[in-house]
Image (cartoon, rainbow, N blue to C red; front, side, top):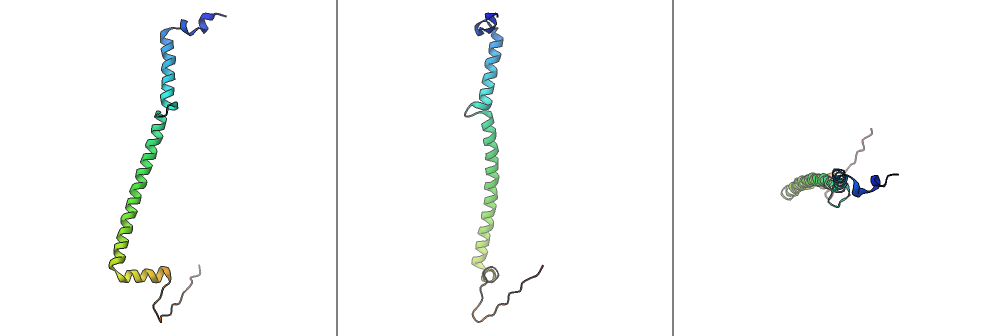
Length: 101
């Protein structure tokens, strides 16, 4: 067996640079804490969170509008109390009708 083939000091410089370059690329792509793979995953997560944030802002605006409507419209408040919570006025009789499918 030829020992010169196994000795890395006898290899060509270009081959050594190729091996070192390959190792560096693999390191920065997958292994490092701030690797390209990690950055891509974090970028995707950031985009998801931004979309969720916008959705929640829209829901918040809608809920604020509903609160404002409830503060200004007493008939709406009464309708919601009757329909959703089954409340009734004093002396009033409520009949519940069940629908059969």
